Length: 192
Image (cartoon, rainbow, N blue to C red; front, side, top):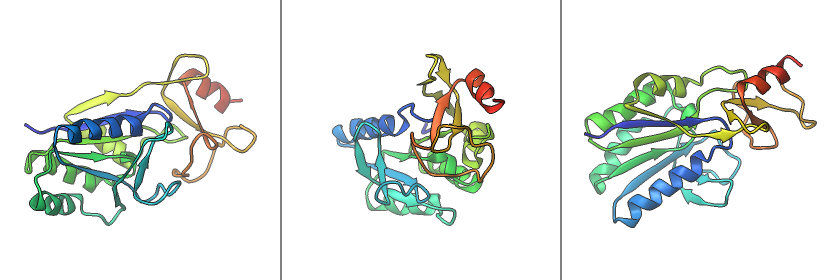
């Protein structure tokens, strides 16, 4: 039975690296994969999954209008897919997560979704919330806080490293915009 997996973490836990390693493992065995990333993440060339350690691979892009089930079904008809992998899964809509569940249940293709659990205000992203609710398997990837503890929070910072307390849920960036912290240090910095 194919399953829907959600690999989640804070920033800098190696989600994209882990996805690209899984893709390599499937392809090394002659299996076919379909990679996806969010159109919102425009830091690199559009349609690329990139890791901080320099790995990158071309991928399909999704936005709010993408019908994941339809797109994956069409690709599956042209050549049997063995696995679908989604980077930046926090940006999926609720409906898209249900479509991915149908990919696993009806098309019998495993779906591996990788994303952040929470935003910079400790609130769930829509895609993450739905994946936490219905995924068959939940896997936490570990990142490290400045104190050495497991980081679970994403703090948005300004150019001077000060916490940003308000703003839109999504601001695309990396280490220049976010710091991964344990809850204790997140709360300390938040409350100044």
